[in-house]
Amino acid sequence: MNIFDIIGPVMIGPSSSHTAGAVRLGRVANKIMDGVQPERVTITLSGSFARTYKGHGTDRALLAGILGYHSWDAEIRDALDIARERGLDYEFVCRDIPSAHPNTAQIRYIMPDGEEGEVTGASVGGGNIRVDEVNGMRVDFNGDYSTILVLHLDRPGVIADVTQLMRSQYPDANIANFRLSRKERGGMAVMTIEIDGIATEGMAQDLRGVENVVNALLIKRL
Image (tube, rainbow, N blue to C red; front, side):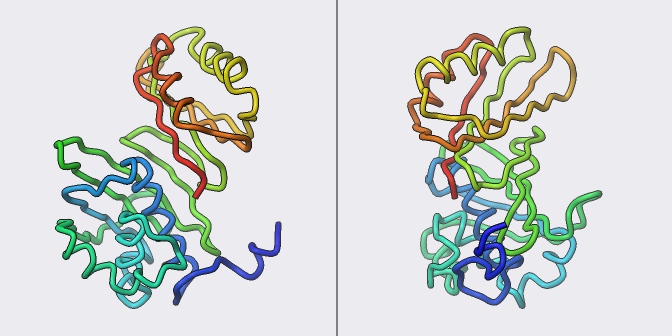
């Protein structure tokens, strides 16, 4: 635990869980979209997010994060208007997601080129978050580290090929945490690699060239 866990994040209020954490969840989606504004977003709010989002400004916070703002940016207060002015079509849906954390948001987006994606995560207190799913695949990261998501075919040797490339070409990118999830043996799988060293977009580009890797995405530290 550090001092920021005690005093909380630098933020525009009123709630670290419902506002600051919501901004960070939106920023994860922003980074997955590579900072490009989507054409449309549908945000499903579950649990206490659904019941109190207007009073706590969770709707404004999520949109602010999607637009690339930080938890301390004054623009959070006007995020609904800013989104409309920028032509972002948005909708909030209140629906309890089974077995989800009480402060869960599911962000579905459509990009200008028609590409679709989805991010599901929770605000777990003190402005901290947990990302649970990206495009239907289970993940587990919190944005405290730069994170590489590697979508790949579940084949023998892929993990070794990925980590060997990182070791040989990016020796300063120390792996702090590694997780693997898959829906079924031999199907699609995703590596979640949290890095406490230097992480660059070039790393993701190189990993896309590894055999059986479908895509690699860098989400820089929030």
